[in-house]
Length: 257
Image (cartoon, rainbow, N blue to C red; front, side, top):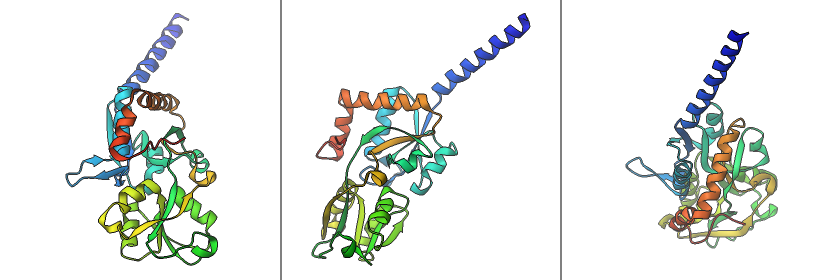
């Protein structure tokens, strides 16, 4: 009996030790690096952008050592589930469909989607107006969900990255872009390539497709890590760190209501 109790005690001790080691492990954060102003890569290979700085601020608040891991958008959730990294900080919207596969923190920002077209194009944002029009958007995003649901007669042209959408819009291969409004404004409209383009049709939103804002995605079993991130999001909003990062990239608070 004593031997059994000893073995049980030793087993519990090993489990506790393993849990402590896991908590101290380096966190690997999945990022895209191709979605300015939220994330991009400099010529020297360094990663920059709002998402990047938010990830770093959250890690600092949690007192966790973090490593940023680049990942193409299409493979984000599969790579998370395959344990290539522990969390995704890549402007991923919290949607009912994604919640079937992964868990999310509370939002860390929420901005509307909009169409962008060439000035003077007279593009009408309606089912009739978009019928047969070539609309460019990033593959596997909430914007693809929205277009397929709301404008099924438009011709969707899907791209691996948002940068590719803007490139083809500038040279006239597509009639319009549909994306997050901030990404379109800072990543295209405020550049030389976007000077002849403008937003059309106002804000676009569907709760089923666009969800509740952008959150940090994690594996469903990582409940403690989710709590750590949620506490850290609240903390950087309260202590002003979030606002300082926000002000570097945007002229208003993108956290949303």
